[in-house]
Length: 329
Ligand SMILES: [Mg+2]
Image (cartoon, rainbow, N blue to C red; front, side, top):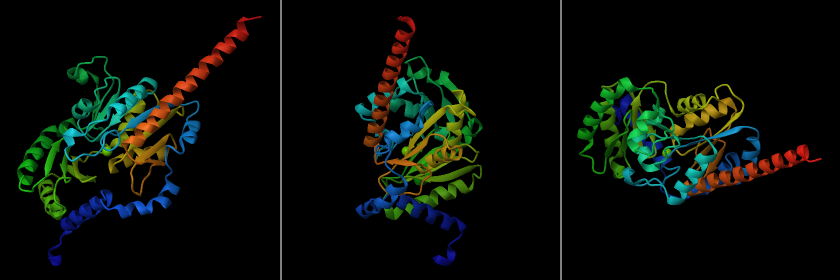
């Protein structure tokens, strides 16, 4: 078998190895936590430091959806947020400009989140919508700001149909259309069939050099090979908010996936704001801090809201005090 190994097989094996590494199921991986914590401390423990560094700047929050706001579940259609998370997210959006950045289509992620006051960057940032006043779901289309890959839509739809057909023999395999990109889910596939499934995907994609495959948590993502990713989406949203080339902004980006690393990289290269990786296991990352799971993300966001409420309250008192000093004899 080994002699037959071509470049493609090596690629498939790399996918499988790194997919196993990024989706561990064994408890012993938890033992490695101490060194990792040293390099990427908990954003909850370092909360005071984070808000101190944001002083005088506008915080803008960027949040991935799956695995960050919602738990990772076997059926991607059932990745619901808790009610607590929804309430906190609503509060966050009241105090800070907020964007959801997801691999999913805008429509899908909007259906989960249902908050019109947010920015949505779907399909790995290739489809960006601004906040809309309307509460009607249909009206979300009004907010289109940018679609980086619209010319790829017919090709993506074609590949979707082929992949559905070619992968239906693999039990548990699921192909999801995310409008400008596709996800092939391995979560419900027996690990011994992962290589076969990855190989099927690779063979289909060989015919489409304009599309590329990246790997996430038990998922292969297929998207146009244009230079556009979650990092570019972050740039774009900041620019739409008027913060391009500005030092008065402090973006906080929270995500759990390899695709979120592009955004972490943008922040670290600008030395601006903070990247927070959601993970229970040690990972190589460009993020500065970590949170263990969506419930810790909720706690962090909740503290951010409380901190802002307190600081704007004390700011008001200060203003009132000064006003009294100015007007009273
Ligand atoms: Mg995610």
